[in-house]
Length: 195
Length: 179
Image (cartoon, rainbow over all chains, first blue to last red; front, side, top):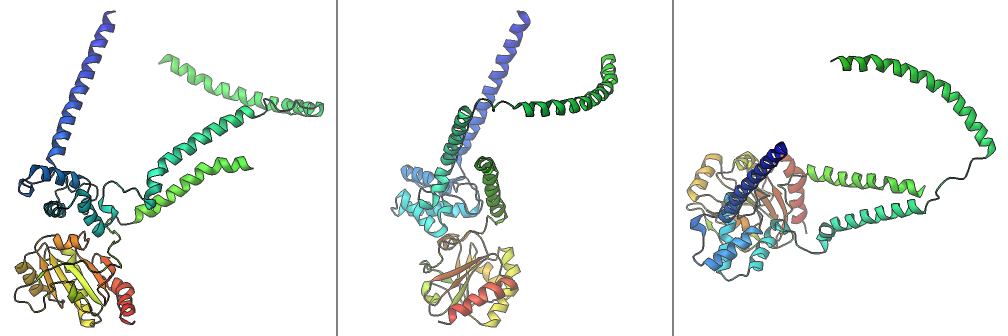
């Protein structure tokens, strides 16, 4: 009972530590996320507009760092793109219009989330289609197994005789090799036992 | 027989996927196809370098004949690598070569051109990246081939080498120049 209890206590301790660690990691991640790479001098005075600028920036890829949004990237190019986003918003563009402005110049590539259109259907539907295909394949293979005849037709007398002679021949050979193998393994087992 | 084929289906699928990966991973992720191809040069207004003859101030100056438009900057190492080739292109005189210096101060650009030679007909400058974003550029050097109607026909990313010039750009310019 006691050792069990102790184990349980260390168990919860470990879990608590993991949870605490995760909380710290999450706090750091969230903090970093809200800060982004936006410098104070870039920010717009209107907080609502600035909020929209942040939202748009998060969907736009930094074209020189490729796997960061312009909101996260410290690259010069990303900074200038952020400023451009803010300029466009100040001129009265909607969020979509700002994105379209950059798509017109860099292509869909500049969007971190691929758009939903005929050329990207494979991208959007591909995984679901593969999953459906896999499920269908499994279902069909099980059905076929169930429908398959339970046992092959019984052997004819002639085949039985043939089988018997074949087994007799094989049986001799198998016996000799089996002996050789048994001899080979014996000393090993003994050695293991001593140590 | 049919069943055997079905068993090989996953293998075939993996082979197809591998094919995509082999092709995809060998591509340079920096080389993005330009969406501006076959579209007119975007609208822009620039200033010419102070004290230098030949200013590139707007898209109208890119019309009337086939032109080359080169994006560069004094900060750009690869541009220096390309510079000798640009001087050769200028000497060949097949098409006017214009330059846009971006993310660069005009005095720095002028000093750079003074030190290494000036191969350009017209030059415009932008101290920010704005003009680069306008042209959908991700770095320097990049060079556009623009036809007589001011429509972008080709974009080359990276330094122009002798091979690129001989095999791609020169034939294209010759082709576009003969109606």
